[in-house]
Image 1: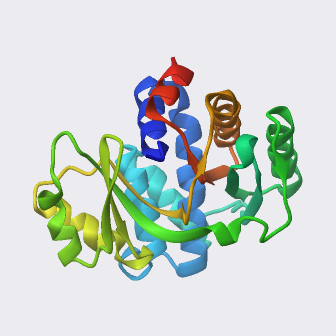
Image 2 (image 1 turned 180 degrees about the horizontal axis):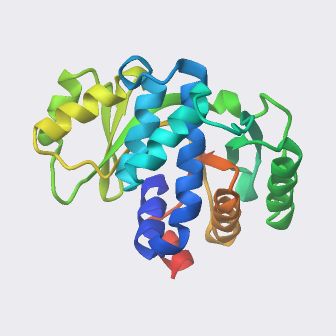
Length: 249
């Protein structure tokens, strides 16, 4: 068991949502702006924008905020920031590969934040391409395994999903990036409640991490994710769920 979804679930339950909502909305708005800038403001004709908007809606982001972010990306708004995508690669405690995706209007600031996090918790930044080959891009839909069984998820397979995997107390429905929205829609039409859905860098293999390194690794990932500029952190760790519970407590 990898523990990836378990860690996300623990953090979600313990998070003070109102205290972090402003930061979350900032990140979601940036993702919408970049998607609109790169693929246009038509949600139906821009899959990346459709995904970014869906994530914003899942987080209860106000409609006006979403529309402003789209306008900013298409140039219809004023004072549009020059946001760029930057990817950092490196290794964390226990030899875990980390792939960090950032959306930033100040590359120097973001690089300093990422380097500080790696230095603080015993990680090391690598050159471009040093760990990216260890990951493949997939769509992942997370569903509570205590409420549904694998048969309930078959509509996603019919809609193009590639596989269904079990990760601790959740199912992960794996899709090609372009099939994520169709698979999610098929599940929701079948009455299956989706916990979250995203296009992510899924590790090809996982590195077992002992409890001594796991604490530092989770703190490193948390510090990276707390950066306003970091959009996503992908890692190939394999940590026991009980260890994650103790770290989070």
